[in-house]
Amino acid sequence: MTRGANLAMAEREIPFYQPLGEECALFEHAYRRRLPLLLKGPTGCGKTRFVTHMAARLGRACYTVACHDDLTAADLTGRYLLRGGDTVWVDGPLTRAVREGAICYLDEVVEARKDVTVVLHPLTDDRRVLPLERTGELLEASEGFMLVVSYNPGYQNILKNLKPSTRQRFLALEFGFPPPELETAIVARESGLAKERCAALVRLAHRLRELKEQDLEEGVSTRLLVYCATLISAGVSPDFAVRTALIEPLTDDPDVKAGLLEVVRAAYG
Ligand SMILES: Nc1ncnc2c1ncn2[C@@H]1O[C@H](COP(=O)(O)OP(=O)(O)O)[C@@H](O)[C@H]1O
Ligand SMILES: [Mg+2]
Image 1 (cartoon, rainbow, N blue to C red):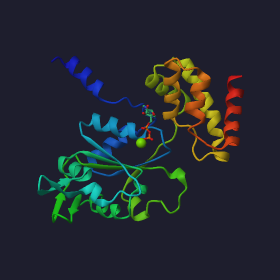
Image 2 (image 1 turned 135 degrees about the horizontal axis):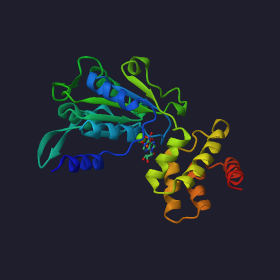
Image 3 (image 1 turned 120 degrees about the vertical axis):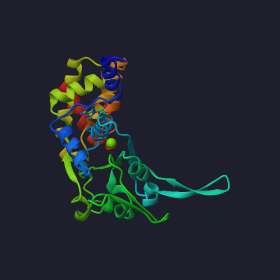
Image 4 (image 1 turned 60 degrees about the horizontal axis):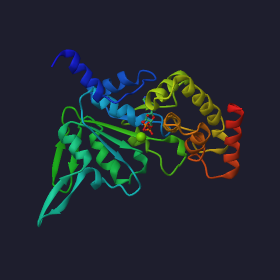
């Protein structure tokens, strides 16, 4: 295969990510220096896309785990399972990443149960080990292993915050919504809708986000903008697309909804 063809293929396999600053270089430094990384930011602002993009660029597999309040350490590390009459040990995603030298991405890590931090701690200092209590193994992380976690500080849940002893083990990058030109470029690229029409949606999103402080837990995300533009691009009327992608997902409260629709009317006239 020619070098050109190789490059073209590599590009096709790397998910599109529009950098907003120096985050790609930072990720690469963290990866090379074997430092774990924490991504903070609202939902739908590109954290997951960033990690899958960087994993592909670095040629590493990426195991993503969406954390929830039932997630235990065993869900990450593994467990004994019955397989055709035999009991066999099956690695969880974290153990697989540690063995293979892959990137393990724990999305919304604060949601996980407390015992999860216990397995993360020895992996996040220079030992880079994962003790498997059940099998008695002490795994040393392979060369390419990297731990990335994300959380959304916006939920304001004091019960669910990372303890300083945990968060101070990570480099941390803050994510926010992209500046208008970049967000327009992202929405256009992801949806196929013309740039000018995407720019109008981004302007609308900015107005809607201004309401966030008062009435909404979270402002309209880049993800929702992409959905909205995708609907419009598929022929759905802009009115209906805005309603289903930018209004209804944000709130159930009739007054707040009316307020948001007011903003839409003012923007679109
Ligand atoms: N910087 C970016 N580059 C490319 N796409 C982006 C970017 N930011 C957001 N997106 C778009 O928004 C969607 C949601 O982003 P995602 O990474 O899933 O958000 P998060 O993980 O922060 O909740 C992506 O699927 C992508 O279409
Ligand atoms: Mg995500």
